[in-house]
Image (cartoon, rainbow, N blue to C red):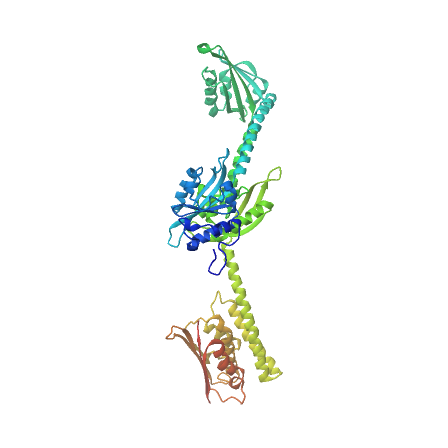
Length: 624
């Protein structure tokens, strides 16, 4: 089939693409391939690029569409299975798979492990780990499901072979252990008629009982730990019953006179004579082993495991273990508390469900790559919290090898880096803003130098004016550096300029009036330079140059009809004298900055009026 742009669909990404493209789908319940929904087309495209066994079961008739790996699995049943109903074509597998399909079409995602599936009537069916995923249409109905299978037949066969080998090894080990025990075990006998024990030197050493041939049963029971006495008595009575079990094993403690406790493994065999109703026990033969060290080792191991689990659960991270195929075998408690999953939901491949959908395939690909190479690795991905929120985590993991160098397990730790991840993003934004400010600052410095030089020439006056203006810029940068913790207000900006120019001695003639108004960072730099020029010239030539002048600075904020917040500022100097011809603020850089730069850079409206006895400058600019 050709798409609207003339390209073939499905594209030739695999061998099955052409088979699907050329199949007469109009003869099936799915209808012509040109009429398939976008969700079904996307499902087919995903199947074709999947290296695992994957197929789609479509519509109420459960029509089959599959990929190359599934075609190989089908063997001689391919290509006849394409386009057929699963409910009629796969007679051998129907009983197993139909209930799973029913649940998936009901909207449930299903995971099945080691599911045997017999397609060819073989003596040993194939086994698969299956994941069945409902594919909803745009209206939410489930018209199709996708099935992905992991063939685990070889692994299961290997595990069965291993189990048979282990059983043989255990039997051999048992025989060997009995032979070894004979050289280390104590030997004892019990005479039911006389109700006496006989113990050898080794048994006496382990139990702290004096060796002898006619020890009463009470001697043995007094040496036995009180918590184990009833157990040994019951086992002995069972050995004496002709109808009972005539081989027995028990683990019991014996207490030495100094208070030390020795664990023992006791094995016994009844010696019988007669037959039928005349059958009776004439003797009980037994061995005794001191297993105190192994019991202590077991206790130490349990304590170590408890400490490990306690530490694992107290730490801030998730700890886990898995097999080399990525099936989880253990999680620390914090995983369950965070994800809300249970053991049943999380173990195996269940953990995969709480990974962010965009991170799942990269995470598994990274895991398999590292598991194959056997290296320690780290990877970042998002995990869903039980309230549905995803947070960023860093996983670090490494393999564990057996004596032959084969990877048997992987262990890992998952660390919450969400706050760090967000901080890094904020830092990136701040660095970008800093770079932008720096470029703007360099441009401003260049313009200051050009304007000052054009006004003064390369003279001492240039050096003084230029340094003053750079100092003003420096004060602004100091305010900007603290703006995240302390927003810049118009009062703070004006006060910084007045204080820098030594206005403390004329405070009685300076009035600042206005509410707290926070300035936007982008406007602070240019506005500060304008205020610096006004303040400098007020000090040198204006209201504060003599003894009678006064300076009034008044401001307020207001909202325009279209909802824009703006600042209105008035700078008024009274009691001034007409400045000499060519005074800097009257005809120089400052006036040009106010009348041209502010409107251009800040979208401000400005007015500058110099009379015989007063100077009034109005600045109106946006606050956001």
